[in-house]
Length: 127
Image 1 (tube, rainbow, N blue to C red):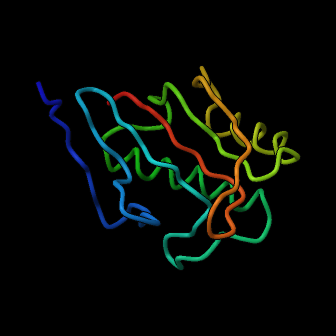
Image 2 (cartoon, rainbow, N blue to C red):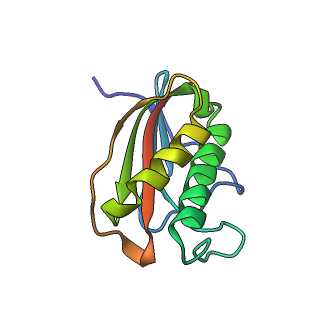
Image 3 (spheres, rainbow, N blue to C red):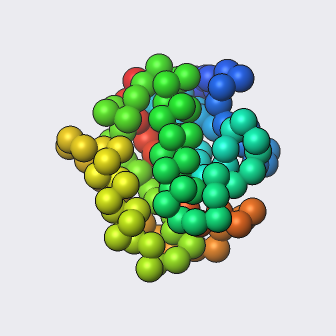
């Protein structure tokens, strides 16, 4: 039996960097692709520094969730990809800002990221 799913889209969603959906809705779950620190208005990095890019990544995640009918408070699991483990403390502080209550489960691998990104965040959320 095939799983029925939807791909919500809207102009205010960040543009994907490749051939994939920003978010897929399957039942009551949303699967959001990695969101980086790219400013949707300019198509450029939000800044050269980690904090500016990370803040933009969290903002992009919130925008995708909103379009799909959810929000940050509905996120149950994240994966935060860091380009540099030395930015973990800054990311953790921002994570607490964007998820102040009942933070979701999280994995935080250190990886090489495309386009000069210093962080990317993906999630699974409830609708």
